[in-house]
Length: 388
Ligand SMILES: NC(=O)c1ccc[n+]([C@@H]2O[C@H](COP(=O)([O-])OP(=O)(O)OC[C@H]3O[C@@H](n4cnc5c(N)ncnc54)[C@H](O)[C@@H]3O)[C@@H](O)[C@H]2O)c1
Ligand SMILES: O=c1ccn([C@@H]2O[C@H](COP(=O)(O)OP(=O)(O)O[C@H]3OC[C@@H](O)[C@H](O)[C@H]3O)[C@@H](O)[C@H]2O)c(=O)[nH]1
Image (cartoon, rainbow, N blue to C red):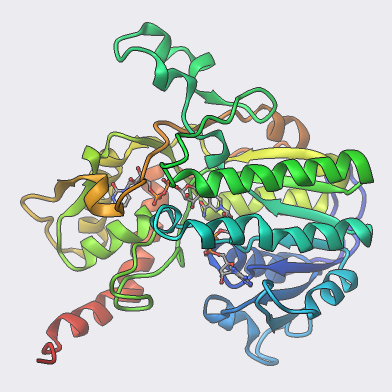
């Protein structure tokens, strides 16, 4: 339950505030809304084009927080109500974006508009009205590691100086322009630079978040069940879909790329610390990830297969994975980040935050959710005769 006497990291009472949360109906937004309703007295003006993932929080009068969350169905591309909502709030959190890699090379214009152009008015309204902004960027702004350009057998590849990603030191290394994968990272980088410049020149109070593969329940969609049959979500939902349908998991280019995965509930703790501690969060860019949860995509597939067999009680397939080329899976213009380990120095120093949940544990709770939510619907979809 929310307590009125929550304290910030410096021991001061936290005053309830109004938060305009744009993209509140998405994966991260839904978890952040839940946290804010259950554990704080803050109010949320939830802005999105969808609300399926937060509908459970919006049921009238069903919850003690029903007067603290309002949903506004607004497309921020063209809606004059946005400025009014930002003015009414103390803080704006902007999560809205196209952020699935399958879109970056196939819908590069939509990707660039969504991640740069559509975010511009949000930054402008915050700056002009002296409102604080927490903007969601991405770990993809780092692109590839310096080490990836060294010879395969170079011992320097094992030296953290060549792979650890630091907010205030690492360069942003993208591929060539025809590798349209980088349209997203580049748009995110430019909006980061613009926000930083608004801070430097006009005094905007901002925090930039760089999430490193946050995963958990409600991430993306299961194709053909609660999203388009031909849609390609991020890897957690792709692999969940394969496991639910008892198909081999597809390893793009052999699944050699490495990622670090953090449990959504750990990551949301970090965002709440930013919200509640403006003096420590303003003016900073924060990596938010779990450096201890590194795996290649192949290792992730193997672990998910093992965990899913445990939580579903169904035996694994004899051949659980299959290799597929990136051209076949994503189309022309795909490219990849080789390795993503966040440096945690800044978030540790400013907010004292550390992730807690191991990869196995976060997969166990997430795949339990996926099985409970989708297994029956998938069975029915598979059993349905295909219309001729
Ligand atoms: N999940 C991750 O691991 C991760 C990693 C890096 C960066 N991020 C960033 O975090 C943010 C949130 O990511 P997510 O995983 O929750 O994605 P998501 O797709 O689940 O959520 C984004 C939400 O924004 C909404 N939205 C998009 N365009 C909009 C518009 N024009 N008007 C109103 N609403 C709009 C969508 O409907 C969706 O509900 C994004 O900016 C993303 O780039 C996420
Ligand atoms: O079925 C699949 C899906 C994905 N993959 C691979 O799995 C890896 C991870 O893919 P994801 O779809 O989760 O996306 P990425 O980690 O590449 O990018 C993500 O990073 C952070 C955010 O900004 C975005 O949410 C997204 O861009 C990639 O190497 C991809 O090629 C597979 O091997 N098989």
